[in-house]
Image (cartoon, helix red, strand yellow):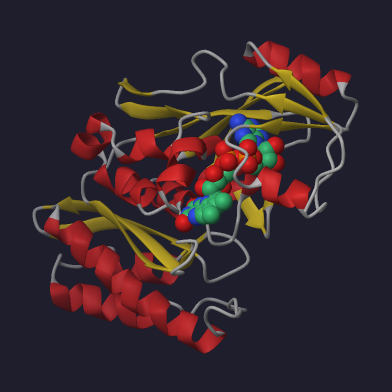
Length: 284
Ligand SMILES: Cc1cc2nc3c(=O)[nH]c(=O)nc-3n(C[C@H](O)[C@H](O)[C@H](O)COP(=O)(O)OP(=O)(O)OC[C@H]3O[C@@H](n4cnc5c(N)ncnc54)[C@H](O)[C@@H]3O)c2cc1C
């Protein structure tokens, strides 16, 4: 339960963070809220020799809307996402998802960037970002890179981020007709199953839908069968019921652990898809 010794350095800017990471020569790691990294270090599953604190880099935290896109800085803590008036007005599903994370201590320290980089299979924000077709903005020694959330989450704790890159922000077009529904593990509040649903609706018809799932598989993913079943259909309880019936069918291996078996999780994918869609419909 005691980590190996490490040096601590506080970065003052993005470029300073990248320079410090380079200077650590492969033995450095960024630390933001520390709520995922420190437990790993205590178990010695991660043994960085240099911790580079990015939590106080000016402008790395904050939420704003410009040119029809909302940007959330990587160092923004979950509490600020959960209580943002802008998100509540323009894209409530995001603050809804952040509000379900852990407890007040976790939400006051844990960051969006840390959650996205760590990519725990039960983390909430990846599902919301998938449903919003968000982009992850990264910076590295070779410059900027933008990766769609759909391509970013690749496998268990595996994302499309190079060892010398930093996540700077996530960006998405706000959607009001979106919602997040989650069955949480009672102690940690991590998702056993979490579903984010986002609908584009015109004159009572679902033009398109995006569904993000977390908790059920090795990494957060889209439920494309459900999305196809919804597109072009009238926005109604009957449509939602039909779509929820196919939820989970496309999934290959489903997670099984002490909290929930695979069969139960697969069943809950349908239940929470229905709940997320019903809540999104109520915002239409
Ligand atoms: C008791 C408990 C309950 C929790 N419950 C939930 C829950 O219900 N739902 C949920 O989703 N999460 C939950 N979490 C996780 C929590 O949300 C974490 O805060 C989050 O996953 C990681 O954010 P962090 O800022 O703490 O990252 P850190 O622990 O500081 O870092 C995690 C990893 O991300 C890297 N990293 C951090 N920021 C960046 C960046 N900007 N660019 C590149 N790499 C970066 C670090 O190097 C490290 O590898 C829980 C955690 C605890 C301890």
